Length: 96
Image: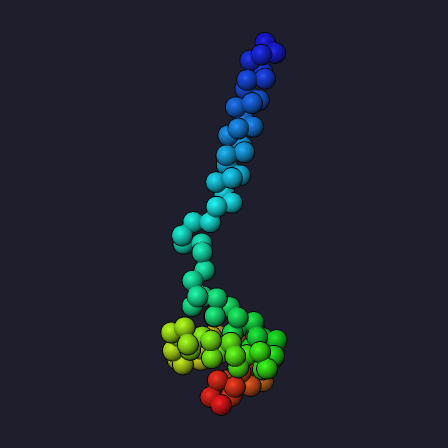
């Protein structure tokens, strides 16, 4: 009986360990592409109000293929979370 219990526990541990290892490997849809990284960075910097770091982030986003309209949309959507003054300053930084 002890051998069957040990074999059963070993199999459970192996399957549990495999499940953890499989869950830690990101799937293709979970990996952020460069556009999503720029969206997150611009939204975070707009929310913080850090205009000194926002300007290079906007430039990097434009250089990586984002459009001005996409960057404006990120800031417009940030309005609901960070307020009108910070969003307006972010938009002014984009235009300047």
